[in-house]
Amino acid sequence: MKKTAIALIAASALAAPLIATAAEGDSSQWTGNGELGLAVSKGNTDSETFVGKLNMLQENAQWKNAFGASFLYGKDDDEENARRYELYGTSGYRLSDRSYVFGSLRNERDHFTSYEYQWTAAAGYGYEAIKTDATHLTFEIGPGYRWSKLQDVQDHRNGAIGRGYMDFATKLTDTTSLIDTFLIESGSDNTFLSNVFGLQVQMSDALALKAGLETRYNSDVQPGIKKTDNLTTVNVVYGF
Image (cartoon, rainbow, N blue to C red):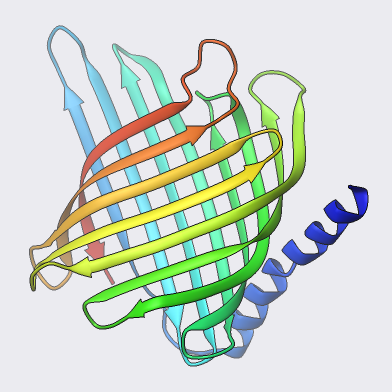
């Protein structure tokens, strides 16, 4: 088991040099979008929920790179009830027009779930099953390693994982798009799932309105904490 874990760590460590090499060796431009959403309720219950996201992408004949960040903050009757931050980076080196090898890193910190943080590193194979102007569908799969810590206690849960990822988007009309991304990181201690589904309507060349449903699941949680979190959002999206 030790040898397996060491091999997985070594393979996952490819993420950092891949990202660095891509950044140094390629001058193609990055594109992306930022999202902001705010929900405020006043009356018998005063609540506020603030959501922000940033997604960036760079692609050319040799490299496929992505970077993202998100945060969630919420209060209910002046008492904080949500605070989460997430960062990720993925770099892929193309083997052909549709296939590539990748390295990825992800960090999540959440103050209101069983896990204070979850760090993951992975490497593997990616394939773009559909690649047209209107629709794209991409799959990634590979081994990795996770470092995690339970909330408020010195209990660390580290171990090998399997990582799977899907990215799908399609244009329903010239101004309306359907978007869905799915991530699974599964190990002996915990299986983490995340699915983000959205319907986006373009209002101008740069601005869009997006309604989304984000579902997050941890199979191993502390007593009193639910395994599944659902978040419904309506965000303004700015593309650049």
